[in-house]
Length: 324
Image 1 (tube, helix red, strand yellow):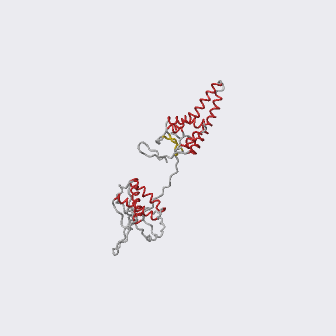
Image 2 (cartoon, one colour):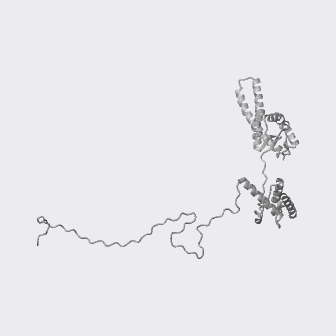
Image 3 (tube, helix red, strand yellow):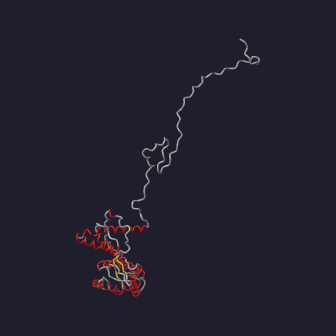
C-alpha cells in the first residue's frame, strides 16, 4: 500500500502498479494504436495518391503524431487515466494526491512516452520503473502522476462468534458511547482470531481488552463471566444497536403476544350453555342460522271420481221430471 499523505493529513490507501502489469497494459495499448495507424495509413495513401512526395511525407508525419501521440493523450484525458490496456489490466492513472488526472498530466505523460516507450522501445521506462519505489516512469515523475491498481482482491471478513445464550441481552443498558473505534477494532480482531492463539496468550489478551472496555463504560461485568464471553456480548450489543439505527426500528425480543385460537374454555363447574348455534371462532364470521327442516306430513287420500250426470230432457220447461 502507498504511504502518501494528503494536505489534510489523510493517508491514501493506494496500491501502486508494478512493472509486469504496466508492461502488459502498454503492450495492449500499443497493439491497438498500431493496428489503427496501419488502417488509417492505408486510407491516407489512397486519398493522397495524386499529391507529390513532399506532401505525402508531411501527411504521414502528421498522421503519425496524431494517432500514436495525440490519440493516447485524448484517451487518457477523456477516460480519466483508463486506456484500453489499463482497463483490461485493472489499472488507472491518478494524481499523486489520488485525484483524477487532467489534460496537462496526460500531455506530459504522452510527450515523455515518445522518448521512453517509442524511441527506446520501452527500455528507459522499464529501468525507471524498476528503480522507482512506486514503479513510476519518467512521464509519471514529471507529470506528478501514479499508476495504481483498481481491482484489488478483497480480504476475507471473518464473523464475530456469538455470545453464550445466557449472556444475550444482559448489557442492553450499557453505555458504549465512550468506547473508541480503535478499541472496537482490536476487540473484533481478537474475537475473530482467538481460536488461532495460544490459550494462555489469548486469555491474557482477553483480560486486557475487557479491562479497557470496563474502564471506558464504567460498569464492571457480572461475577463469574469470562473475559472472552464478556467481549462477545458487548460486541453483539453494539451490533444490535447499529442495526437498530440503520433500520430505524427496534424489534421486540420475543415478538408480540399471539391471541389464542377460539374462545377460552369454560371453567370447571361452570354451567354448560344450552344447545344452540356454535359460538363464532376467532377470526371467522359467525354461522348463519338456517330454519329447521320440517318432516313431510301425510296427505289425505283423493275423493273417488264421480262422473257427471247428464241433465234430463226438457219437459215443458217446468223443471220437474215426468212421473214414471
